[in-house]
Every structure is written in structure tokens, then in C-alpha cells.
Image 1 (cartoon, rainbow, N blue to C red):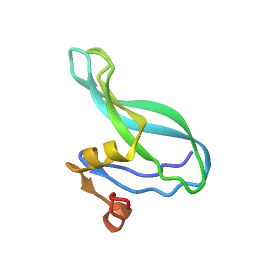
Image 2: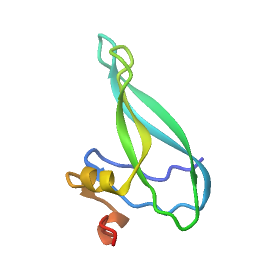
Image 3: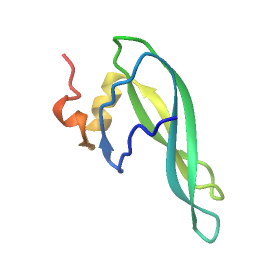
Image 4: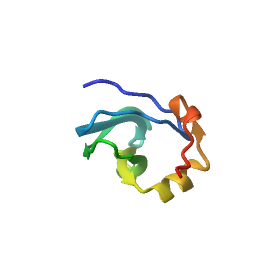
Length: 103
């Protein structure tokens, strides 16, 4: 397993991956329980990426319940949804040089 990137809230980036089955593991921090303890939580999802294709993955907020806090699940979305979501986000790293708008 390799840490691929770190994202801040309200940001997006571009990542080049080799084709094949990939396990995306999203680690984030949340507050849990009545004492608001901060803990790390993970959400994992497997995707099969084909060569020559473009994929958009949204880290979708997921409420784990009062006792377990909030996490972010990787979810495939289409280009129209990606454009809508990215409109309020800051482009980082490779995304600065490659616009999200595709002709």
C-alpha cells in the first residue's frame, strides 16, 4: 500500500493510475462520542480502472452516527457531477495544469 496523496477540505486534484483493480483507502479524522474524542477513520472501496479511461472519484461525506462520527467514502461520479462539484473547490497539484472541462 502506498499513500498516493493528501487533500485538504474544499480541494481536488488529478491522479494518474495504472489500469487494474485498485483499493482506494480514505483516511480522515472525526469527532466521536459525548467527549468529542478525535479519532482516525477509514473507508475503503475497490475500483477496476480500465486503460485509456477517465474516472472521477468523489469523497462523499458519510454519517457514521453520533457515536462514530463522519467519514468520506470514495464514489465514482460522472463528468457532469464532477463539474458541478469542482465549481466550489480549489484545484491542487496536477489539476491546476489540466482543467476539468473536457471537450
